[in-house]
Amino acid sequence: MRLVMKFGGASIADGEKIKWVAELINRYRDHELVVVTSALKNVTDHLLEQADMVTDAGDLESVRELIGHLRGIHYRAANIAIDDEITLNQVLGELDSRICKLEQALTGICYLGELTPRSSDYISSYGELLSAPILSGALRSIGIPSTHLTGGEAGIITNSEYGEAKPLGGTNERIRESLLPLIRECVPVVTGFIAEDASGIPTTLGRGGSDFSASLIGDAIDADEIWFWKEVSGIMTADPEIVPDARNIPLISYIEVMELSYFGAKVLHPRAIEPAIRNDLPVRVLNTFDPDFTGTLVVKDQEQGKEVVKAVTVIENIALVNISGAGMVGTIGVAARVFGALADAGVNITMISQGSSEANISIVVEGSHLNIAADAIRSEFRNGVIRELTMNPDVSAIAVVGAGMVGIPGIAARVFTAMGDAGINVIMISQGSSEHNISCVVQSDDAERAVRALHHEFGLGLPRS
Ligand code: ASP
Ligand code: MG
Image (cartoon, rainbow, N blue to C red; front, side):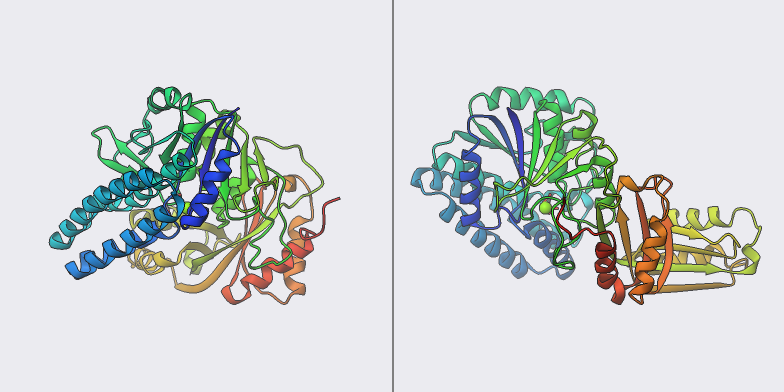
């Protein structure tokens, strides 16, 4: 088989884990493999936070501290993951030269006091630029021929939309040209998340974008399957930290995974598997630390089974804006003006609901956008129409997801009865016309209880028959 295997940051969090991952890859040596790797756990977050800090504070001492910290964790990981001395020295040399370049870039932004999206991409790309040589070295040190490549070297060429770059046409051909000759000879380890634009400037595919890299590569090289190795047992019916009896979902459709990703489940990057699904490539989500477990298989379509609801998720850090006023009733264009104003202010809208009386519109936005959203609406309607604008910053959205809900009556009733029985006040409800999810907004304090109540109501914790 030809397989693309992607390892997330938690799977390669330190030297021991990287060593384990190399052994795991070794099990599949008889196949043609491409490995896609994330940064070591938390490194991307840390790079981005520190880059902001350095820009604001303009203080070279914090650059030195950050570099010292990164050098420490990557050296330590390499020392543990790579037994063979020659390989280890090679890898340490590569890490060193990359860390020097990063230090120069950070020093630059420190002096300039300005972090552009382009430099932010450059800096955040170092998470993967430092992890890939270690994983590739760990493979060589156990006798697997391997080399490492950046996403750009592997052929992923994007536009210059830094932070959220999109692949350009021709990427598939380039990936094939660069990887197909390699996979016959060795296991290439490709940095996830990062790519480059047509002029060779580093870009990134958006946070969590390594999944997307894997899927682009799988599609281009016509892989038989794409395996996402995570630290959890596949895709679960709910977050096990909230619902202790959450279970693995063995089979799920692409559309359901998309809904889950949009609604806060950190399973796969929402755009991640689109290239795979377009070409009908089976995608598996597996557990690095329980590799014999079958995990979750994601397929394009799934026949409607008896499970109407597959999973319950929650999005935190959202906020509600409520607009009301008798002047809105029957006035054409109010909603358009609201959405226009929010779009102009760069506010992302998560959910919308309007009562049929038309005297009220409720909008859910990201928590960090709340004040911008409120200001934008106030300024758009400074001459009236809207009588009152209220905000609630402490809400969460709960979504019940399952393609099996389509056309089955009574699901919404069960959702609201379960919430009522648990004494939870539902602030707003919404169902997309796809009928693949029903979502509702509750006070954040009630969110976890709501997830547990719904998980129980739909029997998701029970053993499957
Ligand atoms: N390292 C990147 C991030 O943390 C990409 C990824 O892990 O998928 O967002
Ligand atoms: Mg990640």
